[in-house]
Length: 393
Image (cartoon, rainbow, N blue to C red):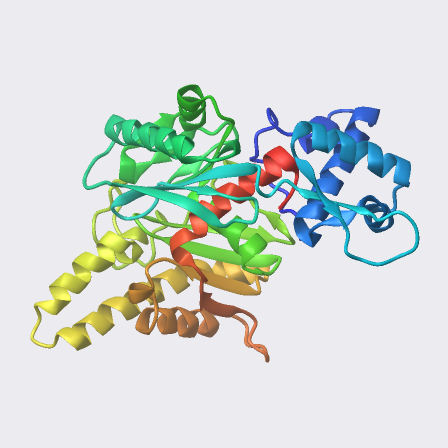
């Protein structure tokens, strides 16, 4: 599958990075070799084991070139030989090679859940091998940072193979250097999270907004379209955008930050950011749970709960309709607790959104829940590391 081109990924760890190439008028031989090494890894990761001859035919490179590339990748530990092919053919049996699926692992971290920090050790196919959690109640500031660092170390200790690095999905706005410039729910401002984790663990680290990580996972493992908005609903509300197969970042690394967009002119609750009527005050998991608890104490709890969920869905659709219409997106995906999102809330999002878009037949946009929402940020964080370290997605 074609990798999402994401310029947030650190150029420190990417061989032949696009940013470096753009500033040079000529392409160096080393750039071409790095590209070909990445092609071999990407092909094996996507298609599975094959012989050097099959790789040569698939990539359109000479057998000598492919053999040289494979030898270098075996030396690096990125590729392994699996033994002879079972295919019966004249001549010497072919030796199969594959990406080193058993010898390389990745750590993914999800800091955006409502009351817990989560981490996992994953293999190169996105399968979770070990998972860890830390309960997080009302902690903010330095206490959250301390627990994140301890969780990263614990995850590294659980790895059973060489670690390529750590990917982190966090609430808030994250710049290209892995600094969380603002995360109101953690009371973070200009927290150099990437460098803190790297210094603590000694491992290459990538930090991204949690919704951006989630949309990476949806696009890579979930068969998402090339024009998608994925809304991640947890401690806060954010969205990740894939437009034309590329993740949109925005001028200030804040594309998709809809949680603190004011929805409506009818007031609303005070938000942690200091404004009134932010989308998060209706749509975040804590806000929904508080409103549903109040509804449960009303004379007609079921009807009151329906009102809460439908209003939250309507507010979300109001915020998203201009985005979907302006970018002509084909898919809206909601990721979060299914028990909150399925049913009245999802129906309200779909109905309100379609009522605000230019009518077309078939429907201009599909609206659905994400598959495997619980682990989508962990897998997306792993995808970032795979792309950064191996050039595969």
